[in-house]
Image (cartoon, rainbow, N blue to C red; front, side, top):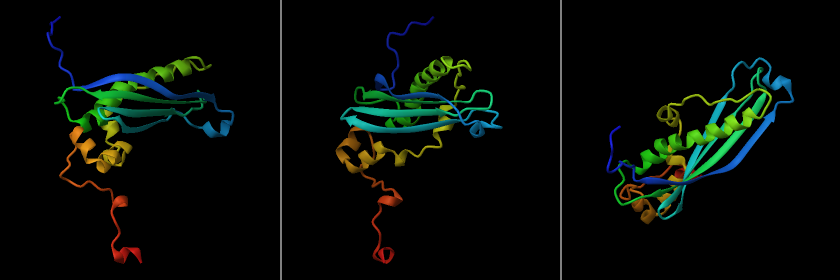
Length: 181
């Protein structure tokens, strides 16, 4: 084993993980799952600034039932993180978009296996996930946190967000007089 005098860190620290929702149910309506061979997994993600140097990352997972195991499970957690120091070793955007979900996924996996393990079909373990590929489906610009940074230049500067570039979503752009008629 190699001894490290100083462990390289990302510049971000996990303060705590909070479970905000967990639910388990068995499908009463068999037609809902009739012919469904595999369980389907849906993932939800967002983030927001909670205080000057603290931010929250939301991760939710919904597991739908199959013919073999007609159960549904929902687990939603929030990871509360903090900016450490002044120069993180990775960009804030990269941390929130890939590292934070990778950190939080084992917590969601545990909730799902605990809930399903108490049911009649045995525990279900979420598969190993390629977080980088999974997160390509999510647009960072449409998150609650990105909106906060667009609206507050001082906060954007603190988080290393480019303040010299105006980031606007199409839905936030003012309409021209021709478009308003």
